[in-house]
Length: 295
Length: 282
Image 1 (cartoon, one colour):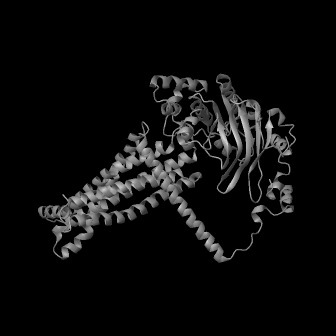
Image 2 (cartoon, one colour):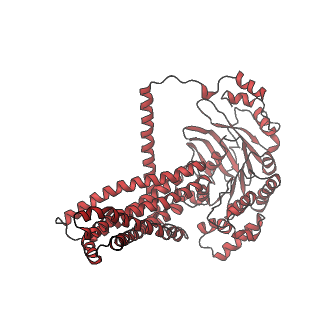
Image 3 (cartoon, chains in turn cyan, red):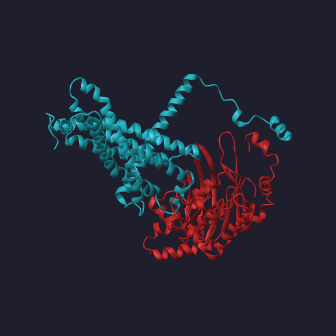
């Protein structure tokens, strides 16, 4: 050990410790920001290419045998209970929060209209998407990340299977086909939860509550929520699979992939929600200027 | 072999058709660093070539380039006359069916049983085969690698490292590839199991007319299974860390190589390596 240390100390400084020419703070600032912008543009481009490759496979070849059912089960059947439960609670919370204000102006019986419209329009699809991103998206990123780290994705390629076709397409299909069902479940259970709390706990008149509930929600409200959810499902699948495919090595890499898959999906869901709501409302009001019924 | 001509390997005058794999002036750059530079190499059909070298010298990157999992930044890799560097994904998929790849940690699919893992290449590439044929082939390959048929229903996590590697070998061989690539086949195994794997590599070669590339830093494996040994060496400097090839010849030539670094590697002697590393001049 002494010999080794004496050799190190007598040698020239290691390459990593050779001092660089001084760089001004401004140049360093520009360099850092430039690097960050280039990285961001590269990532967006890479994500776009990933999605494009997935779409190409989607329309040119059937999903691999045995990959559809298992993913549909993971995404749909296993998510249903948690979506139903959270939907119920959200409906009840809405009743609790709104009851005070509505009672103050004597419109307690209109509570159902507000709860149901909020749920069907916004909370149902966003809640279902959030639960899907948290439960399924993170798991997808973790599974694919582990497969990347343990060379299972390379193994797929080495056997002539395209990993995007084999791993991403079935997950994408499961998300876009089953998120509408999860949204409907979240809507339904939220409405039931709101009704239960309003009528059974708060004692609002059953018939009046139901009458006003029917008036408050149109077919368009239902459509807008389900329509948006399909886009949310697509975003969750693409973002989660992308993060998994680009997972960095090690346990930390897999953890980061799972976390960022959820965070990025959630941010994109909310941004997409805003954009889609504006577009769909514009279409609706251009078709029905008076705000008439969609169906 | 001297350093000057070390990166030009193989006989360029080999008869056409005899060469299965050819690397022409290939360089690979990953994450802003040169991993390999100007590598030339030809591998003939039926040969078993070992690639040895220190950790981090670019062996695995080179091997993945040889089978088209990575593309060279410049130069070309030709397999059976097909340029892998410019092939489209469909052509690549068909070429990969002709190459069996045994991964370092086997890379078995966790979600599948051993049976499903071995059957995967057949089911994916030869979907016309009836399930009875698939079953027969899977069982035959399980037996060839010395695994009991009861292991077919187990999951990869239930097997030992040596068993997983043997499953990986069975999976790589089931499509009767022309080339089998072994990535560190004996790493992490005890000496007996390492020798079992070496015997399987030799047995595979005896049983099938297969060309093999074995990436390893186990000198016993290199000596036992190879016709030729290539030794890679990293040349770390401030601006690059490309690998150079120091040795190309039969295993017996390693001990008497002209290059001091080859002899040191073979004998497992550090020499003044620590000093060189500290100078960033490995």
